Amino acid sequence: MTSIKKRLLRTAALCLLVLLTLASLGGCSASGNRSEYVSDTQSEVGTREPQAPQPKRPRVALTFDDGPHNVRTKLIVDELNKYGYHATFFVVGNRVDGTEYRGGDAMVYAAQNGNEIGIHGYTHEMSVKYSSCSDERYEYEISNTARAILEKLPDYEIRLMRPIGGAISEQRVRESPYAIINWSVDTLDYTFRSPEGDTEQIDAIVQNALADVSDGDIILMHDIYNNTYEATVIILARLHEMGFDVVTVSELLGEELSAGVRYTRGKNN
Ligand SMILES: [Zn+2]
Image (cartoon, rainbow, N blue to C red; front, top):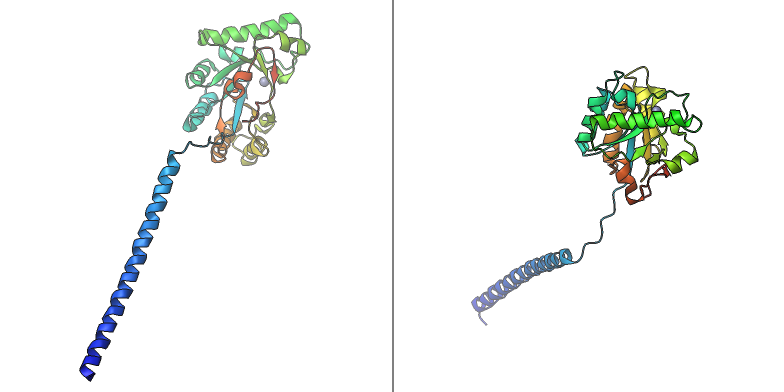
């Protein structure tokens, strides 16, 4: 073989090697595309399979006693609206139809925004315990609060009552046309009401509300204090971050809700 032929053969062999290498690279690339395609197809098939039920979001009920308050109740409702949350307001009758706190319109505003209204008492005299007061006084407190609510909210279906201080005799629970709602978390917010705007006081309310919060809790607060409003702003933001829904007591208890029964919390999801 001449040296020219040898050089030609070497060149041809080199070209063949280059072509084979290119083909092999192309093959890898094609194979890569194919595997992507398969995986896309599998994921498409996956989406057609029945969906597993989504885990339910944990829920709590925020409850506000002793209002309504013409300013603070409305501010709390506006804050709830930012998240699509709803709370329950256990109102004092003479703060609905009387001049103290001038809260009647605030109660209507709360109800119009999807919040629940329940009975607390008409005068909120701490010496009047539903566990021991006379039948006449008990009837006066409850029926006058119901009347005050219905004067502002005709046809409203009142389902809930929270006794002053949570105290009520078992017989009155059984005979009540309302579900009796106590609580599982006490924020003790009334002890942190002054000085107003004090960060430590507000943080204490937030801590009490959230330190051990869990699915089904009923949280006790009072919508007449500025620090409670400031704490509520933080509590709602944290509950939202934690993935909680904030619902009314009737929503929390659902089908379990029954007149003549006392509840301290909802059941877990
Ligand atoms: Zn109260």
